[in-house]
Image (cartoon, rainbow, N blue to C red; front, side):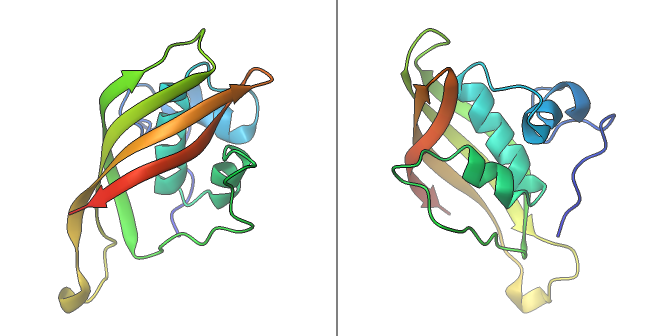
Length: 140
């Protein structure tokens, strides 16, 4: 499992900010994502840090699974936001993204993978908090 990034390390979400000023406070519960895009970025960082608890906490109750087991063989490397529909004053939004991944170091050669997961994800804001609802994914 990957440890959470150091607060002074570059945030995995791709904003260029350091983790302690970007997704770290969201993961710690110190603040909420102001937009669906910010929530999407923080969720990518949570995948990169193997933080299933944060992913479940930010998943809408109507679609949230009872538990979440992350694939320990995958290393999430880079996020590209392709399109955002909805802004900070909306209560619903969609975010299209491409998440680049590869096998973790030490994976046997015959099991190594590298690819991109593209997804069109839906988000809702309730009580001032954004939640991931669902997504249509495509992995290559």
